[in-house]
Structure formats: C-alpha cells, structure tokens
Image 1: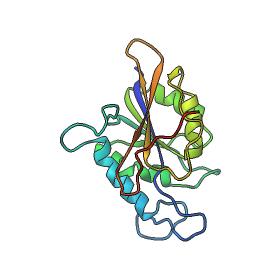
Image 2: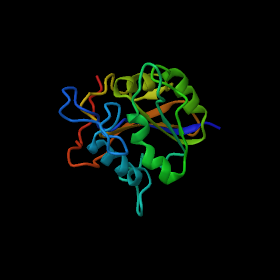
Image 3: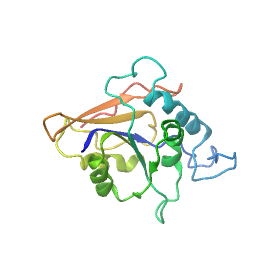
Amino acid sequence: MSASKIMIIRHAEKPSDDGSIVGVSQDGLTDPEELIVQGWQRSGALVRFFKPNCGPFSNPALATPDVIFASGVGKHSRSLRSQHTVLALAEFLRLQIDLSHLKGDERDLVADAIKRSGNVLIAWEHELIPTIADQIPGTHPPHPRKWPGERFDLVWVFDRGADTQDWTFTQIPQMLLPEDHSDLIPVP
C-alpha cells in the first residue's frame, strides 16, 4: 500500500508580527501560538473544500483525505496552528490527526506519508513546504522553491501515476475566504 495523492496546505492565518492581530484559542483566549479569527474561519471552510456536501470538488485534482498529518508541538515550535487548521476537517471525517512528526522532521514525514494508503493531507509551516515537496520523488513539473509568507490560500497536490513512482504537481487556489487569490506561486 502507498499513497496515491499527497496534498499540502499551509496552516491558516496567524497573528501579525507587530501584535495588531492576535491569535485566539478555541476558548476565545489570546494565544500567540494560535490561529487568528480569519484562520479559524478557513479551518471551518476546509471541511466542505475537502468533503463537498453535494456535487463535485471545486477542482478535480482534489480528494477527501484518508490520512491527515500536522506538525506536532515540540521544543522548536509551540505553534498549534497546523493542527488547528485541519482540526474541524479531521473531526468531521472522524480521523485522528497524525502529530508524530515535528517541524524539522520533513524527510521522515514524507516517507511516512508515502507509505500510507489513499489520499494524504499535510498541514505545515509555509517555509518548510518546499522542503516537504523536495522529498517527494520524481515530481513533474517542478514545484515553487518558496511559499510566500502572505499566502494561506493554496493547495499543492502531488499525484502518483498508476504504473509509475513519479508524481505530478499541481497548485490549486482554495478561494474560500474573500481575501483569497486565484493566482499561483510562480515556478522559477
């Protein structure tokens, strides 16, 4: 068994660096390691994005995940944003979020994801998403080398061919919130 599709999203919106927009816990308490209100909105919207109520997906390259990974909390990162970005989706699908990989463990994360069966979703920190993509073997066309800090609204999709170990790469705009953009990250 091995994954046929790996989808990667950035964690949802986070507090501003200047402190003008703060993170909020599920209980409504200020928390710098949490999503902002807009991030919680994205988290909720991802439920029907990855599991449409009726009708097709917004893009045929999307699929309902069978496995969900998010970065675990460790000494190098106390952030709960990746976990909470996919929390509503995992609860709706009755899936346990795999938190066994920490930020900095991208090689083992991808090795684990590839071994899983079906469709895999990974929620991670944006600066390391290209590192995750680098670990997916035989990807065509190439993926962007950097994920812009202001983008929270894309999905990188890697599909494995039925009779090959190579993967095809596609970017899909989420278009879930009014601030989302339809443009893709350029590939150098």
